[in-house]
Amino acid sequence: MRCPAAGRRSPGGPEPARPVAGGELPGARRRSTPRVRRGRPVGEGTAQRPAPGAGRALRALQASRRSSHGPRLGLRAERVQRKGDAALYRPAGVNDTTLHGSRVAIVGAGVIAEAMLSGLLGRGLVEASAVVCSHPREERRRELSERHGVTAVAANAEAAAGADIILLAVKPQMLKAVMPELKPQMRSGQLVISVIAGAGTHALAEGLDHPALVRCMPNTPAQIGQGVTVWFATPSVDATGRAQTRTMLSALGREFEVHDERQVAMATAVSGSGPTYIFLFIEALTDAAVHLGFPRHLARELVLDTMQGSAAFALASGRHVAELRDMVTSPGGTSAAAMYELERGRLRTVVSDAVWAAFERTLGIEAALEGRPPDPSARPR
Image (cartoon, rainbow, N blue to C red; front, side, top):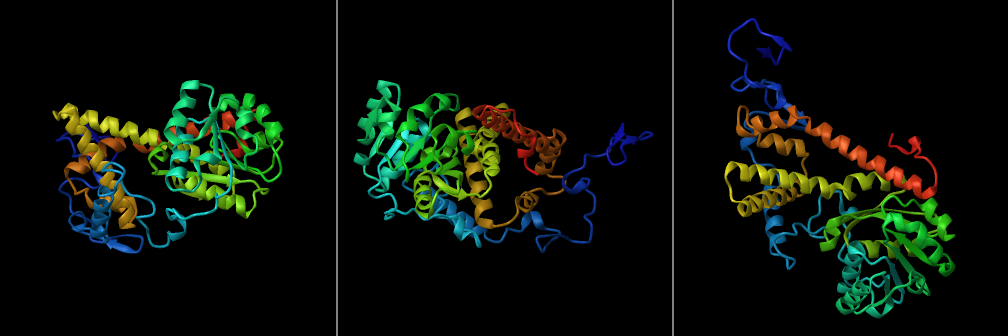
């Protein structure tokens, strides 16, 4: 039998107990020296002591469930504000006049583009009469017109003609065919915002012959106004263009401007693809609950409520998630046994490998659009 602590087989005797969080054995005495994280001692009784802000977390979660958006949407960015993070949370901005008088073209009116359109119209930031969308399918054009009251056309050039702001939302594989259609419509003073995964500003500037560009990466919760978008603007985008970009992207949820374009590629792998990782974990945890014997509908409710509540608690508490995890990981307890299996299965490494694979795929798409091999120096340092 292998001794986990020594890494060798014991000469006999009972199988040693599995280590749990912190490397301790079930039943072993806790070390007398208290651990310190973020300047706070964490000693005995941590698992039973509520974190500061727990009441605030509960109130925030309850408020979110009373939201007119329904019980599943969680915390709205403008509702929950952590100390020191005020600049990162944009107000709802229903009285924002940044876009008033601007003509907006949406080229490739898919799911994310329609989410932005819904947010802009719903908050009164633009008039439906000032928006023109393009889409190749007649059925989709009719749907957009009937649902939002906007003009929908088949030709991308027709949509872009005379627009002050052009939202590029086509599939990456369609970009090379679309840019020549838009190029003749480009003029000085226009702002081009791209939500195309992997489309770098170099490829966009070359294909459109236009310098004022914003590259951004939203994620799927943007469809309900709960997304997060990371964006980068070229030096040709002035203060007005940046303000317009913030207003446009705030229709999708929270937005962060970065000053290194590589970070948009990184965000594609983290927040852009992040919901995919979360959904897979939700699916796996739901399947595990069904395996235990729960009906699937109840398993789904338990898992979704747990995910929602945990995220709300992490936001409102302001503490490191490792501390929150340690709070409920009692020595020899059920969470400790579960954590042992997750760590033994290399969960952290698998997640890191998945994010890295998504990042490298983003670089590959970017390089293909620019007609060059991927640049290893573009990887994060």
